Length: 386
Image 1 (spheres, helix red, strand yellow):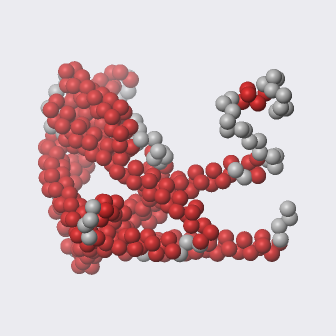
Image 2 (spheres, rainbow, N blue to C red; image 1 turned 90 degrees about the vertical axis):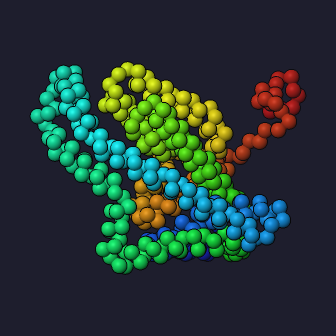
Image 3 (cartoon, helix red, strand yellow; image 1 turned 45 degrees about the horizontal axis):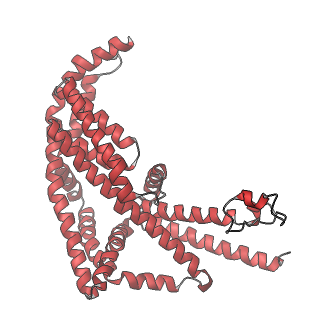
């Protein structure tokens, strides 16, 4: 069938208009990224809390009461996490700073001589360890006073201090309104979709929400549980920096092999520096082995499953690329963008495999769904030709 040239030109112009609109939106986001950051954080919080609000509404609660309860629970959870983690991490960083001289001596007296004897090279001739350790110590000392450093930075600029405080105040306020009006916002957006594409857009939006929700709610919960498990296990082993190493290893578990490998490496090095015996090396290995078994056979199958579809490499690329383009706002939007792009790519693949281009212009062969095998179609005793 020969298409009308005017229809082809009209279709091309429509696609060009949509491309121009998309480019304009990306440009506006890039320009307004500092202003949009609290709105993005609030939108993510509203999206995460809306299912809980809907459940409370289904039980007979009013929308405002449901929103108030969910908002208070979310705010309380954030405050509790900050109260527990900030002093704990501060103590671990202080312990690391105090342990740096001991680590420096271990590297000088144990690690460097072993490496030089093993590989027959002179490491000390190429590296100025004194300068490296002084630089490392100064950086950790600055990191140890995170609150003081941040406050000193923002206090040097009245505008920066005002913007920082305004964002902190705006995030919960905007999040409350997002929670209250989320269904209304979604309804208005849905009403703008062309009527002949409502089914497709609804399907893609639902799949995107499922992918993103599964990743955030599943993988983040796995990261938290493993971080607590690793931290508690290494602390029980007796490592001074066990909690800090466990938390870092837990946060890195969204990348297969990287989290466990980095955690094992840091734990073994810390055990060597602190104890220098085989016993603690074995205990550290047991902690991570138990954690991996629990993750592989309990946490990941139960909490994440196989329907997520977000490859770790895609997640890392999305975070780095969006962060490079849009700064902190881009890092916040990286996972939602990756989820949507992943769903769109699967939809494009589905459309392609059902297209004439994929079929090569040949008629599609449909098998009778009542047949249980292909051999049935070629049975020589069957009088019906295949």
